[in-house]
Length: 181
Ligand code: IMP
Ligand code: MG
Image (cartoon, rainbow, N blue to C red):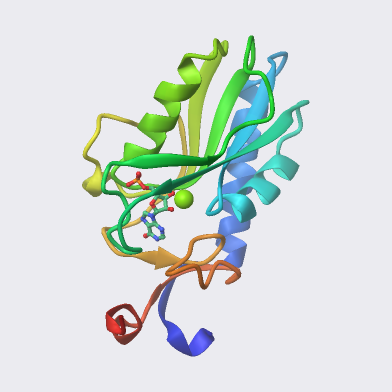
């Protein structure tokens, strides 16, 4: 798997420092609130697992699985399907959406429009990575770990064709891997 990697953007150590900082900010901001972390599957699973342990205030967790149509590097056509909905009631909750990467913004803007109808007290976004150049909807993350340029990155939960999620760092694959199919 390592031989498929062209370059590393964020090492495992750098990711730990990024997550620690986000955890501190969130813990400060959500003191005394009703925090519900909502992990958007599957990409945010690794980030979620680390982030929740960096948060020192009480919180609940839940998971939602959404899928956008289209192939894997040009992911978001705009159409979003809910594959697994939340288990928890959102009434009065301070929802924090935990996402791997904010790209066009279509996925989260759809998710937010759905969740807003369920009367949460607040909804905010925490994304590990942000690709601001790619945005097509007006959406900014309340918490953002790091920015990446307009390149398709993998690792730490992020996939290419469902692979590479288990890499402990964020990196870019060699060109020939992306062009194989
Ligand atoms: P958006 O709706 O365009 O913001 O899409 C966000 C989703 O697209 C993320 O949750 C990822 O699943 C996927 N995605 C966008 N960019 C990348 C990338 O560089 N690597 C892996 N997945 C990505
Ligand atoms: Mg995703």
